[in-house]
Image (cartoon, rainbow, N blue to C red; front, side, top):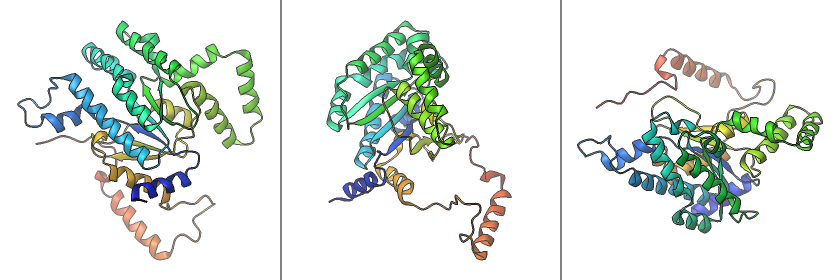
Amino acid sequence: MNDNLMFATRIRERFPEGLTGLFAIGGTRTSHILENNRYTDQPGKIEDFSSYSQSSLQQYKNLINSFFDLGGQNLVISALSFRSFFERGTEYGDLVTQELARLIDDRILSFYQEWGVDPYFVGLDTLRDFAPQPATRQAATRLLEFQKNWPYREGNRKLIWEIASIPLYTLWRFFEEATSEQRAELREQVQHSEGLDQVQSRLYAYFCKYALGVSLPTPHFYLGTNKSGDLKLRSPLMTALTAGEYLRLYYTPYPSLFVRHETLKAILDDLAFNKRFYSNKTDYKGQFTSELAQKEYERVISLASNPASVVGYTRSVTE
């Protein structure tokens, strides 16, 4: 049994419900420029958007491969913000629209089938109903139609592409479209919950099934990029559903698509097996020695005395 297989077995034992991760992919244009354009006269100019999209999707697949190879079961990829379709101008919105078809073309269908993956597309209600470009609305409709006809199977891995989601719109649609029986069912579940934890878990289960079209364990971790210094949350729908409960956040100081297999393995190892300095009791009795408390105090004072120690400052790119 090789190391990856042993590790995957341990991960599945640690998370019997299925390890579920949120991958907030950022810096794809930067990745392409650094990988392919760094020696050109105008490195920042992407001459062939189709080539950029193809190479990015291959890197997506490499990252997904690593996750499943290491024992992961469910993956949510925050691929495109709704701002992508207007914030960077109509030209970018048109180009992004064309690339949505790659999520259901023959090459990626083979990938889904090879790995036993069921794909889902969430958030597309916003594009279908409100996108300024007719082509974008049509692309969203095609993805949703594809989803209706995909042969979903119990026990398959799940890959959720979160595209242009506006969580408040999705929730508003539920209350607009729900039948009186559905409302009564949810009301009954909430009113007969035993404590705050059960209220959250029942609401999550109900709205998750509505928003995603499938039940999903509460996500265990989030992997984002901090390439520009300013920390962001890029998985709005799942963040809204979970309220961030029990969600471990990991950030790479470089574009997401540069994440290597070994790095992802180290992240999952930390998530699953490293013991945190944590107390769910009234205090930390028995965990601090006098020596440890003194050393930790000195570390905190050292960091507090240095404004540069704060995480989240915008990073300047220089020669």
